[in-house]
Length: 362
Image 1 (cartoon, rainbow, N blue to C red):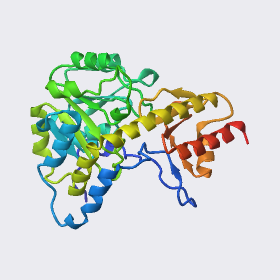
Image 2 (cartoon, rainbow, N blue to C red):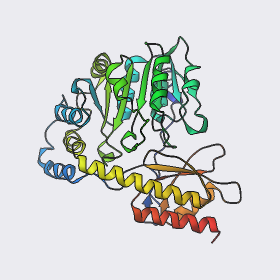
Image 3 (cartoon, rainbow, N blue to C red):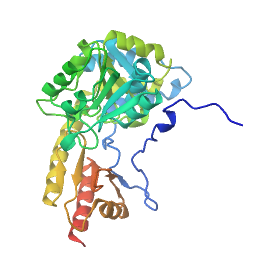
Image 4 (spheres, helix red, strand yellow):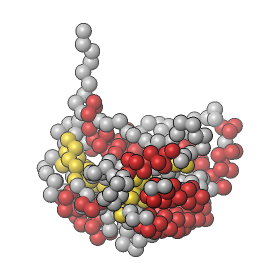
């Protein structure tokens, strides 16, 4: 006896692999595997969170007005062009549902958010990967893969696991090279950490072009990963299409209010941004002194490549884990690299000390 047949593509979707969070026998490991903020949310957000315990019996605001207005004020954007989701991955899912279907092609830059592939396959689309030479989004690699069946292109800038970004001129070249019936998704989850002058996170394009959506998150710099809040900016027709698909209460009430406080806490955001840049530079320099190739990162993590020789990423990973430190192995070819979230100064010191120990053969 056979049951219902699963739609084509659904069983091809890979399971998302989250960063490891536990080590057997270690009560409080140093977790540098998931690009979380080691600082957590700011004081304003924590005060709002503590005050909301008596409101748990109430449904969220379906219009999401408080949070929309807060994001609009913080980034000088029109609230009517914002969409909110249970993480930016839900926004990606909704825009895929609105514009992608069976027979369509979706071009994914090699290191765009993994859930883009999942949602594209779930819609029955064909995924067309575009390589990223030397760890960077390549406009040429994307544009040469565009066909009449292309309906969607997704990039991450900065990308993950490398932390490199697409410069402003290249982003605009990419958009100009796409047909107007193709959606361009710019995933800018790590944009708050970028301090380079030639960076463009896609805000202006998303606000003015009819076929661009930019997605952001409050999980990183704002330290609200547990609450799952993402937001997007797009032209009104795209926003309206997403709103037709959005579940009525997809962002819970606590998340909305806490996020509204967090996004307007400019002092905390600036502190985290400055700390990250300082520690990222320090850690990167220490990696170089140990003999690693360091991919220049503009995000809140750094990826290192092991030199030729007896030392390798797999052994280093086991060495670090044995000392209560969790990095993120990255499946490069060859698989000889590790990614480290920028943690607290003491956590970074412990990680560097363990790596020095490993590289010295002690």
